[in-house]
Each structure stands twice: as structure tokens, then as C-alpha cells.
Length: 472
Length: 133
Image (cartoon, rainbow over all chains, first blue to last red; front, side, top):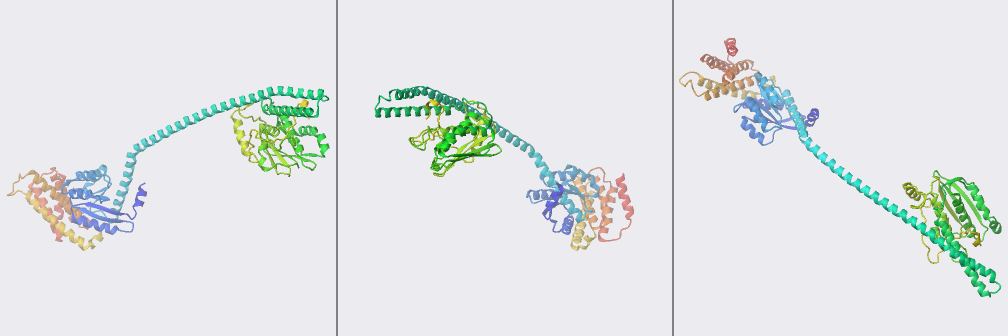
């Protein structure tokens, strides 16, 4: 630290106060300082002949170091030193003594003088060094004292800061806990809500099925038994009624299948998609022969999932591809791509295509793009596909343009975990929710098809329903 | 220290101050000598005078040392010691002692003016032995 101080003093203008009553000594000292002057040492000498004069001088505060003769007219030896030292404890003092008085001098040093010089034995070099070191030492000492004095202050300050930071932290923790609790409550409310909704949908559909089936049955019965006895109009009316009933039944049934998706599913197991698709394709064999259609399929992998649901998914997409064909013979292509965490399937057709603005709507329930009977359907097909894909941790989307065919893409996660919306069966804790959020980000299409309720004149794509009684 | 003697102005100051200091010493000493003035003079005044004597001797010694006047320094140093002891009342200023000190001061004067000094050793011996006892 001392070396640093001295280095910093290089070239500094030093003001020396010599308290000495001998005029010669003052001149002599002045001469020595002049001799020692260089570009690195520049000292100016001030003098006072008595202690009182010296003290007055010091009171002006223009001194860097004091050279003090201990034999002054108005003071005695050590008393001389202590009086000056007490007045300016922060300034360095070098005492001047005679040869005899070395013991006196070292006493002065013990009391706080930085150095002593023996009068008559000092040369300019010795004087310069003594002054510089005295100043440097004093500065270092002052700094140390200052640190010591302020250490307690600093510690108290720092302790205060730490306490405040701690309190802040505690507040934040409490806040976070509150937010967590609130979230858990919301989540549990949501679960409850979803459960009730599912139940409602199921119960409603189930209860509606029965009366609808009755209407359809009796209408058909009427048609069969009394066809002969009814006129053309009456037969037409009955036909409409039967059609209507059938359609209603199919609609309810599809909706039931859709809403029960989570409830009735089994845990995931390995599914051979190649075999699965082959069997689905068989269902459409007759259709394909009739319209000269061809289905090409990549080798499909084994995945983890629900076999029945995946079959339904493929079935719906293949059905749509054939149903919405163009004038050309249908050409359908199934392909698959593998990524680290998922399988990516696509079903490409050369049918009538879909206008870009409907690309998302079609995945909503009850949505139909084509009115009435041109392309029959219940508006549930793609909604069901979407729900199945999502359950398998994936996404579904379409690339298409009007009259240029469509390619439906869907992905299936490799994690083998059923991804249910909150509250439905097989919910597996927070991991599910986060997974869904991740999937959203990974969606290649970048979009999440949104669900919407049926709009006026909404269109749909058809899904042929299972129960044979109302087929056709 | 040889360089100092080159400085004429400084030397002038030296001579001036030292001469005046020696003069002061003579005056103070005569005040201590037995004579018409009361011996039992105010103690305070005596001590004050002794102290002044001591300081003068001290200054002469320092300055002499600084300019290389070794004999002058030696004598004034011996005087300084005696006078300090007397000022601290550790030594009594007997008439004998007063005389010795007076001689010492005269020697200083002579040395300063460059005069030849005789009986140097004897004087020094005497002054030193005073302190020994």
C-alpha cells in the first residue's frame, strides 16, 4: 500500500511547514529542498518561528507535512510535539532533534511522529526521502483508520440490506405460493367442469338416441307395410321423415363417439399401422373398384396408441378422400416420416380440394363445407380425427387448394402417453398440460385448429356411422 | 555538506545569526553571575534565562554542524548539555560553573571569527567533566 502511495505522489507539489526558530536552519532547509527538486519531487517551504505561529499557520490548512524542531521558544520538547499533533492528527510530522536527543526523538515517534532527523546531519536526499515517506505512511495510516471507522457502518448497512432483500424474497415466495394455490384451484375447477361436460354430452346423446331410433324404426315400418296403400306424396313424405331420422341418429351417434373418446379408451399398446391400414382399406375395396381409385401406401411403422381409435382416424381420412373426389379417378397416397419424438403421417388425394379460408374450420365439430346432400355427412368426422390425434400427443392439419386436391397431415407422439384434456380420464398430472403446450409449439403447420360450435348453414364432411341398422 | 559553503548568502545568515546568539548567551550568563544583581533573583527568571541559554547553545551547535564548523559544534554541544541540566535543575550553576560556561562562550566567539583558540583541550576537558559529576 505504501509503495502505491509513494508512486501516486510522484511529481505532486508538496507543501512543507518548518516550525523552527533559527533563521539559518530555515534557509538551510530551503536550500536542501531546492537541491532535491526534480520533475518527480517538488516541495515548497513555509516556516514559522514559534509554536503559536506554527499553529496559526496550520489552521489555514495549506500544509502537507510538518517539520518540527522540538526546542522552540514557547514550548518544551515533547509538549511541542503533542500540541501540534493534537491540532492536526491527520498530517504527518517529522521531528528535528540534536544528536543528544535521539531518545527524545524516538519517544516522539512512539507518540505518532512519522520520522526524526538529526539537525546538522541531514542532506537534501535524506530530507526528501524522509518527507515523502512521512506523507505516504500517514496517508496509508489515515486510509486504514478511515476503513476501520467505517467498517462497522458498512457492516450495519450491509446487514440492513440483507434483511431487506430477505424480506423481499419472503414476500415473493409467499406471492408465488398464493399464485400456485390459485392455479391449483382453477385447475381443479376446470377438471370438474370438463367432467360434467363430458357426462352431460354422454347422457344427453344417449337419451336422445332412444327416441330417435324409435321414430326411425316406426317410420321405416310405415314405409314397408303401407307402401302399397299410400299415394306418391305420402310415400315421399315418409321417405323424407325416414331420411331425417336416420341423419339425426347418425349425428347423435357420431357425437356420442366423439364425446366418449376419453372415457372409453384403453391404455396405449403397440399398434401395427401397416396391418391396421390394410384392414381399413379393405372396407373401401368395393368403392375403389367402382370408381377406379388407387391407394398407395408407404410401409407404415408400429406405434404406441389405441388401435380402435387409430383405425377410426385412418378410416375417416380415407373415407373423406374418396367421398370428396373430383371427376378424375381417385389417386390416394399414404406416406409417413419419422422424427425423434413423433411419427408424421399424410393422406394425399386428388379430389376437389378445400379453399384456404376453411382449412381450420373443418376440424371444428358440426362444421360442413357443403350444404345438404351433395356430400353427406354429420360434421363430426374431422373433429373426431382431431381429438384422436391430440389424444395421441399429436396434431392434424391440411394443405389444400380448391380443385387441386388435399393432403391431410397428422402426427402421433412417440411417448406412448395418452394426452387427455384436463379432467377427463387418465389425466397424468401437470406433465400433460405442459406436453400440450409443447406440442402446440412443435406443430409444423404452426396452427392449432380451433373448435367452434355449429354455425348457420355450416358444412361438414361425412363419417359413415357404425350401426348397420341405419347404414346407407 | 561541502556544497553548503558555496552558498555565500547562506553563510552570511549563518554568521549573522550565530553572532547574535552568542551575544544573547553572554547577556543571559552575566545575568546569572553573582554581582550587584541579586543572586536570589526570581527563580522563574533564572530558569527562563537558563533555558534561553540552552536553546541558543543548541542552535549554535546545529548550525555549526550544518556548515562543518566542527570545533564550534563541539564546544556548543558541551555547553548545551550543561545548560540543559541546569535549566532542568539537575545541575547547580556554581560560580565555578558560570565561569567555565563563560569561557566556553568566549571560545565560541573566537572560533566564529576565525581567531586562534588556545587551551582548547583543557576547556573541553573541564566542560565534559562537569557533566560527569
